Length: 480
View 1 (cartoon, helix red, strand yellow):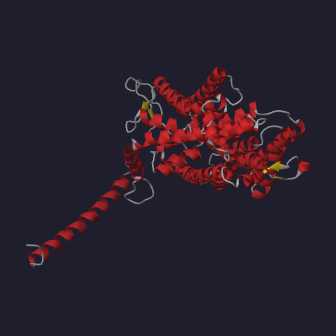
View 2 (cartoon, one colour):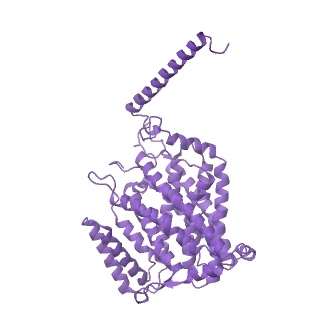
View 3 (tube, one colour):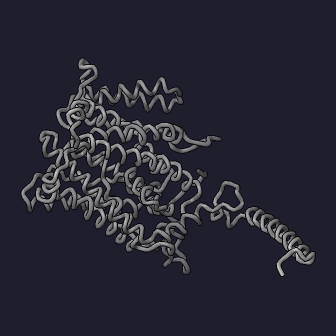
């Protein structure tokens, strides 16, 4: 990361007689530091997404075989100190405890985006933020319309609003589709903004029966966490116990416990100072992200995705307004909202689409964003907490909607796979083997000198081989 915060889109030129009508480039090449950070983050999320996919499949198999009774017994088994109000089921520990780790990483990523990434510059942030907001509002509107017309419950309006970046990347990995860095960055930004507003939705709409003593203790603990960070206190043995206390207090306050994770993530410093190679936020995120992607989210999926899937259940998905609203929201609402928001934002901000890509590519990514697995399952549990049967049906609709979105996106992406592969290979090519992709070194004289030396060495070798071949033929050993 350089001193100048990296941007994912080219900056708008200052208006002059010649550049007043110049448009920004949308989905242009990422700056090298941003590309490297993106590659590191998405590498972990892709592995985590594959584990998430495996956990979801395992949960469905476990819950739909003769061993389903053992699944229910393990999921509903209670443990933890009752005196502290933490005698919870395994499912609740996964949803309220482990997902706090996921939201902690989301908070760090959001903080980094706000202070050093794309969301720092309002001009660069406008387009993906508008796209993400439209991609949340439209599915919610679709759900509301379906349930108003069908007479269903409006409580689940937030279920189809989220995008699961890990599951989306797992789909890409399974398909073998290497999206160009700009499209992957766009998908990640959508997910980051989604996470932000999902956090706000959970905090505002799913908080009840506040315990102000516990809430005050949680705020005091968060203030202490912030103070220790600002004083430069180091040591996991300080922060991990304090984080656990903050989480316990937040849980007992009536506010969803994952909010504590987000709050602590947002407090970390994500800007480098002095001779730092990584900011504290980057270091912590690098350490915790594998735990989030590889353990927390898959375990949550294992104990949340295990719903009974029968012909009648799948049939009810398309006849019950609550479940139909979720499926249509994820599949149609997400695609229309993100694509429409992107097109309108580009139209009115005069952003010019990268000439290597096309609007169907944006639509394919918008469809892929309809995979709303993790947060959608969580919100489904919160929205219909008093109705176990409907909760399971809504979970089934989330799984089905995410599957349909994945299949449709896979078909659309496969249609352009040759273009994506060519762009990806060009972004990754490093012929001088200096660790920096060649595409980022076109203005570096040293790069061209290194390449000249490489080609001169190859030319000398071919001259030697030519002389050897000629000598062999003159000796009569070659072909007649």
